[in-house]
Amino acid sequence: MRTLLIAGNWKMNMGPKETADFFAQLDDAAQKEITGVEAAVCPPFASLSSAFSSRKAGSAVKIGAQNVHFEDNGAYTGEISTTMLNELGCDFVILGHSERREYFSEDDAIINKKVKKALADGITPIVCVGEVLSERKENRHFDVVKEQIAGSLAGLSEADVKKIVIAYEPVWAIGTGETASPEQAQEMHAFIRKELVGLVGQSTADTVRILYGGSMKPGNADELLRQPDVDGGLIGGASLKPSDFSQLVSIAAGQE
Ligand code: PGA
Image (cartoon, rainbow, N blue to C red):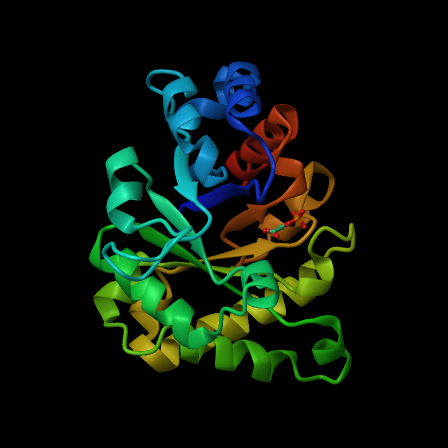
């Protein structure tokens, strides 16, 4: 019912040259249109042009950005607009990643403005939520994620919510090698879907893809992707290697 999405978050890795090498090495199977699976990579801004020019003609791999500003243009030194991403041809933009929240003080109100701007300009936001370790230990993870969902999606119409992708990324699992167990992931994904039902009703909530992120790799992807509410992955480290990325796409393709 929901097309799985395997999205690579390259973070501050992979310059233009490495980006071109990635596409040169990515095998053809991972680039072709596969029913039920969508693949994307999100390089840093400086490598987006290289990604578009080095992606093979006819490749089904989509390209996204890792952030965007909420204004059209103007005096915002260091920022990038949706117009620029559209001019390049970006399909996705990652918003509210925990590293943006932690190191760049992005809060749900800012993320909400960015989500609205991306939607208004036709770019699919991948909205990230997730608790830190202390919040899970204190059993506050559901409350934290509930608040992030409510804040970052505030004021969105049903039609808007239909267009977004959500990524649940428990911060304690990001880049640590420690993954949420399939049960922990499913439990939170089902909770997120229930929150969406409260916002926009069951039929719309059922269409929204909820990705898991946090040390997903070829060795653990299958059991995570088998969970009924896990609709793909937002993958950091393992998405940098063409062979791992390609394996993740084929594991997703092997799901029912
Ligand atoms: P990781 O990162 O796969 O390296 O844990 C995931 C992310 O932060 O999106």
